[in-house]
Image (cartoon, rainbow, N blue to C red; front, side, top):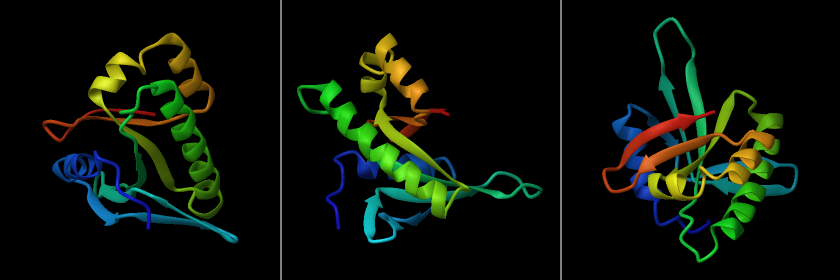
Length: 138
């Protein structure tokens, strides 16, 4: 079982506050002989007339000295999870959960926005102090 990210509980609480039901903590992703663990899975009924939305969340703190190095690692992990999910559970939407401060300080740079768009990275931005969702970016 992988270690929890330092922001794990804050993101989980923010999702619960927003009406999500946590269905797995952690969420196993398995393909052939490879088994990985994303941090969370959840679902939310959007409306009675629509199907429930299912999400998988990978949480990253970006607390090292090099946010670029953290992004390299997070992006590799995100793309592997996304590839395996597309084969086994295409209905699940993968999000990279990050704090609001790193989003404002690092993820707003032109080069970083380019990478996120190029690789279609969906973000969940969370105010870690208030444990509230700031925005979803798909």
